[in-house]
Image (cartoon, rainbow, N blue to C red; front, side, top):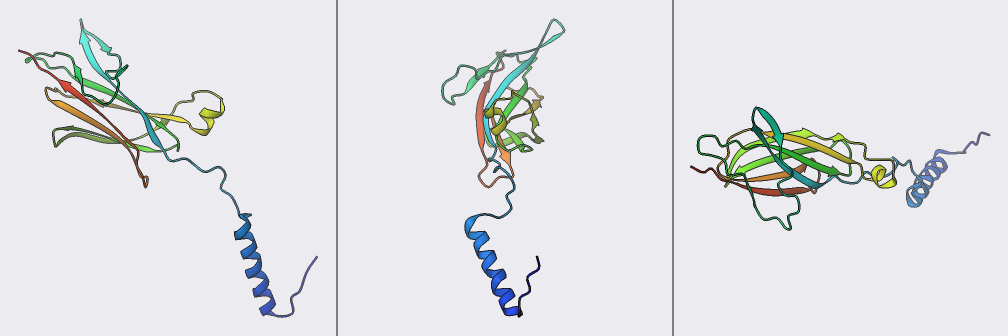
Amino acid sequence: MHMKLRNTRNAISCFITLLLIISSTGAGVSAGPQARPARITALKVSTLDSENARLSLSDDLFAGQQGNAPVRAGTGAANYPEHHLMVLVEVTGSAGSKVELRATEGRRLVWSKVSQTFYEKGGADREDIMNPRMYVIFFIEGERCETLKLTARVVGQRRPSSMSRTIEFSCGE
């Protein structure tokens, strides 16, 4: 069915009226469910140790800890302060986020890296579909005898989510 309008003025007024109706009712094209902003939900830190020519990964240094107090990591030795760290950052929300991890000793930046998250399928329940959990793994090499502050933050958001952990390393004689 074709409908002819007699003049352009009627055509323009009909077009504007149609646009107003669509915008006021929200009947426009939808991009699907709104993506939630990504937020950091966990920051787990483990030390990488070698004993008897075997590598081992410690449990999360912050497991069972209340609050954000510093944690002591190993006694080390002045001749061999082995404190390589594995850091796992868990991000919930928007897929494809980037996470920056910064390590500082006092005010001095000693390590920094930005990495893309990868998706770990957690299950098929509604919570995993609506808020997928993604992870980033960082490996920090180095000999540490100072207090180290790790700060992870989601990059590229208006309100970036962040989380910090502080580790006190000691090197004995």
